[in-house]
Amino acid sequence: MKSSEDMRIGELADRFGLGTHVLRHWEAMGLLTPAARVNGRRRYTRDHVIRVMTIIRAKGGGMSLDQIGEVLSATGRAERRTLLRRHHAELERRLAEITTSKRLIEHLMECGAEDFTQCPDYRRMVETAADLPGTCVVRPFTNS
Image 1 (cartoon, rainbow, N blue to C red):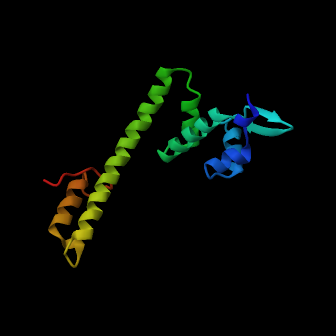
Image 2: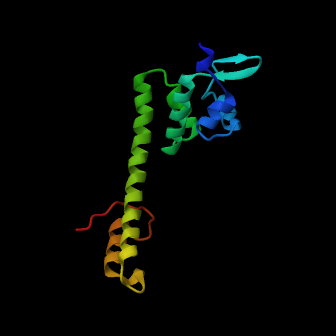
Image 3: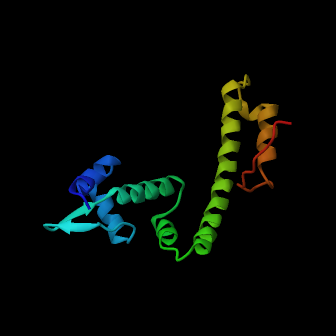
């Protein structure tokens, strides 16, 4: 490993706007392992940059650190795909909720009703989004 290719913990953390304590926590959880220690200091490579970016993107997608650890430590493609399929289904559910919420907000921004809760279009959209009376299940709706 060339010395120009490795970096200290602070350099890796700065690259992503993270505190060094975050990287140390990820190490404690087994998500990240320094390539080497030089004079007792952690050293990281370009592979660690990819690993950190993977963790950040997975967290951005709603995965917990435990879930990320399961994916990163999966013993094979089939196990990893099984884990990711579950998470993908959860992302699809969340995207549907976000889409519904976005449409409601877009309607409210343009709605001319003084009391939007009495707007017939808004009420129809909310009733369509609600699965059953009294539940909080939000389903995507169409504007038809």
